[in-house]
Image (cartoon, rainbow, N blue to C red):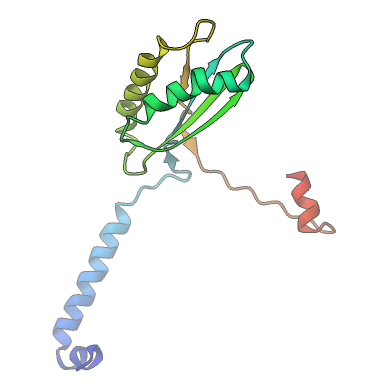
Length: 159
């Protein structure tokens, strides 16, 4: 027996199910957020540490690796990216998507604590690591560019 024949034989059940779905869908629609530009949280932080006069290799071994090792203890992290340049260490961390914006302040506090713990083991001359996690309220933005007489590749240079 297929669904169509059941719906024909038991019309009252089919009408009730249809009404239930319509009412449930309408109520769900009314409860949706109604911001024109909905806010979303940035789940990324950057840890920047200066080490004046040091080569990229020194920065990697003496600063970046130590901070990365300490950060790896955090279960909340999804990815850790690092870039060591002469005199500068930049580490970018991404938080797992399961952590919502109301939980992020606690995660950032743990991150700051981990960075603070490793600060004492950094070499003399290295600056204090700066944790940048506050990117403010971020809103989506969509921009469309069109023009007569230009191809897409030509327009791409202007954007």
